[in-house]
Structures are given as C-alpha cells and as structure tokens.
Length: 216
Image (cartoon, rainbow, N blue to C red):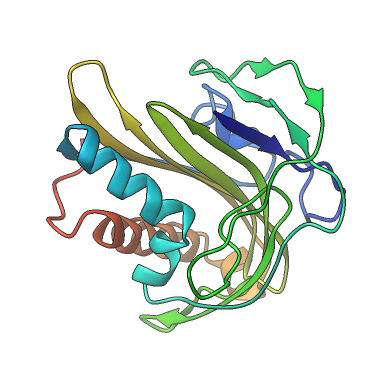
C-alpha cells in the first residue's frame, strides 16, 4: 500500500483536501462550485488494475485531450501513510519519504507533491493551468490522487480521482471537484464554471473507460 500527502502551502486555495469531505456537495468551500460523478467502468481485478495504472500515469488528463508538460516531482519530503478513509476522516500520518515512480519513457508518474503544467481548450473554454498533486493513495482495492491549482487557471480549486474495486466485483471511477471562478468571465457567468466542469468530467470518463457508461 502506498499513501502520500504533500505538505506545501503553494496551492492558490485554502480548503486543501476538501474533495475528500463527505459533505462536499452540501457544504463546499466558500465561493466555490462543487461537482461529483461516479461511473461503473467494468468489473473484476483486471479492469481495476488497468484503470488504476492509467489513472496514475496521467491517463485521465491526457485522454481528455490535455497537454501535460514540465512534470516535476516534489523537491521536499512527503508524508507516507497519510490519507482519508471512505467517510472522509483523516488517517494519522507517519513521516517518511514516498518513492517516486516513472514510466518507460522516464516521465514521472503521479506522486505526492508533483507539479505539472496543463494546456488545452475545448468548446472555447480554457482548461490550462499549473497543478500540484496533493495526495496519492494506492491500496489493494482503491487507487487515486488529488490535484490542486497553483495558478494560471480560470478557476481555483481541487479535483480528486478514485478508482475502486468494490466487494460486489464492480469497478467504479469517481471524480469530485470544487471550482472557485478566477477569470472575470467565470466570475460574472457562473454557469461557465459548471459547463467547464461537466465537459472535463465527460472527457475524464471517456479516457479511463472507452466504453463510456452512463453516470449513476
């Protein structure tokens, strides 16, 4: 099992980790718009492993049509053993370094504290910005990570991506987020924040599950 939370105050929002809160949809961080979707993407261990591997190799972002660059692992220590239980309660940390993993081309995989620049547009909406991996979890039946904005985005906030292999053999992909508008157009027209988020969710799902099932 691998867990990690990166402790660094450089994200551009205060409610770090709020995507793990069970009441996110009812009580989102101030001035932010919450969103959540969960999809069945198959069943069985093989499907879970494949989806988890894709997730931790930036598959959701790349498959969504976003261009990733300047992927940099954390320069400081992370916390090993830190995470959240299914109800969103924090699990006590134990301090140590978390190993950084790379793909066959030497590109850093998702790891606590990794920063990445993202670029992309869809339907004339900007999906770019600089992001930091806030936390990572790799468990026998649960894999995921959380991304937070550092700057350069039209919104400020956080996204969490989780693939779970449930006891009934079902594999589910869940994305949760909260977005506070930053760009003037998004502050004046909040529906643009929701439209941008819906498009991102759809693209993430198609990237992790080519069959593209219907949201639950």
